[in-house]
Length: 462
Image (cartoon, rainbow, N blue to C red; front, side, top):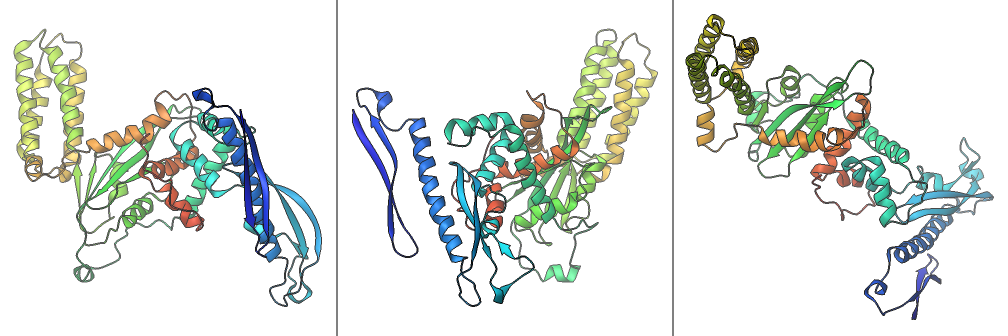
């Protein structure tokens, strides 16, 4: 066995060096399990080290603020109490003195506590960031278990505390958003011509997903998620509850702004054609185009193909004719031939109405065809020549958004999760989760707390 002692030397502002022993270990060396610090050893070491550092820092801060800034006189001390400061390496008990204001600098209050200004929430910013980051990726309970396993944090930390802290962080983000506007176009055509050459184009895909609702009479509610992919900058995620959010356009505008967007820069918005999704992107960027996602067109055609396969059993000739129509429709739309495509859809519907068959799902097929006709008519203005775009290497589908829906919504809100959500709770969670996934949560904390260092923030894949 061998004895190991760990000491710390702290130099106070007056130059005096204070040395303290913070840990002592008795370690063996006969097996692999004894080599190095155990998790328990490291927790004790980090907690004691944090305690000494925090005590020295807060004592120095209080000493600096015990002198009147006007006359340089020493302030009278009223008393002292202990406060708890929650850090990544444990809950630290701190001496918090209270002083009388100097007569030459008296304010509305007779006394003040310097630590109230320094530590208003009694939670270290990095602890708040760590809780928010992991609670955005996994459940609150798993977050608590994870932190307790590897860090010397207080055992009283629970899921409700983490949930409340995440809500506080997300609410602060919400208060920083400026007011919503119908349009964010701030320049006229002449002014846009005078702007410098923009970076490459930006592609924005927006789609919807569903979350289990905790409200009575409602099983699910819709959430909007999106992904903004610039040419030369990191991707960003978007998430909101449309029926709850009062600033959807402002939210998207801020994401584009963070990516260096300017009004003469080309932006392609790709959606599924839903009204709520389109409204978010409309009047957002002057140099923009709106495209109907090819995936959602083919998905509807595929559904009709499945019905036609069933029709082939009782009426093979009729099924072959319907399949031919569907192939024509797909080809016309793929090549941007909207006129012939709509004619083929009309012919399909007329022939379906005339079919006399015992096929049980014929009504469902007719309904799907009529809904497809309406879908194409309503979104005709967003249907380009997909074949030409593909030849030039441009996007034709928001497959990346489908994966975004799964990443942002499915893995935290739905899949294997029994939790039901309020609209407010889901909306706030979406704000921290999207920032965690695209790697900007730490950046936001650094804006709030300038002393935080940028290390430790990496793009997460939940």
